[in-house]
Image 1 (tube, helix red, strand yellow):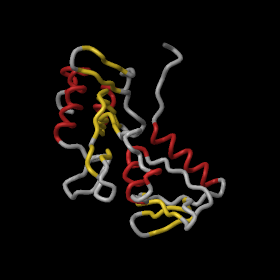
Image 2 (cartoon, helix red, strand yellow):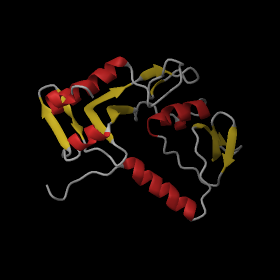
Image 3 (spheres, helix red, strand yellow):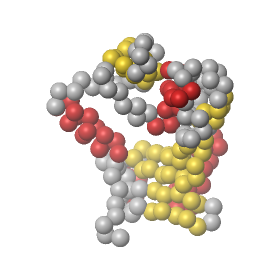
Length: 193
């Protein structure tokens, strides 16, 4: 399809952030720990990195798979804010490889490739401008557990070896899923990656 394509999300988000900064937004990178609520129950801002707070007249919670945990940590007593099973944080496994210049030359002209045969349900994309080759396993995974404050089952990204939730951490079983896609799509060309 000549109308289809893909976009590099990292570069797109960087451009959006820079446009916001250019228009007067103060950009503060960090991880939202919880939402802050006023005495009337309305959200009045966020806590970032477990300590720093920012107040706002409007707060947009665009936290992806971390939304159930942020809500449960922020107001465990407010059942109307909890996800309650209507939303489950799931993800597909995405793997990235930083290629050498020689490998980039080898793979620079590969198309977006979506494979749905046999056990290889996944896709790959051409290398990005910073030499990253991306693979995606098209099977949803969930990491569910019982939240200690609400007692409800929620799903969030997995924890790393230090028991920190980390969207970049992948247990071996998920790495094996990406290896399956790499080998299924690239065949022998995947050797050595």
